[in-house]
Image (cartoon, rainbow, N blue to C red; front, side, top):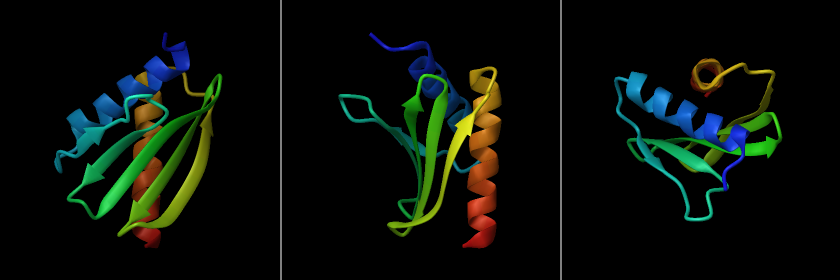
Length: 95
């Protein structure tokens, strides 16, 4: 059974995918400890629960970790999606 936070993370990943003009592929392992948003196989944004109300976001470019943040205090899946997009945007600017 999924926790409320896991459901929020899953919905946030779907919102990011739906809003992205790059149409990332979403994948999750069967045990669902993480969700990957894959952009053209070169960039991956990985989401995973990091606690009851926290989410770990990692951004990989060409397999190298370029950003890692723990997100807290999001109020909804939509708010979390906005925070994830912000991490992604900042990671691309730094890379």
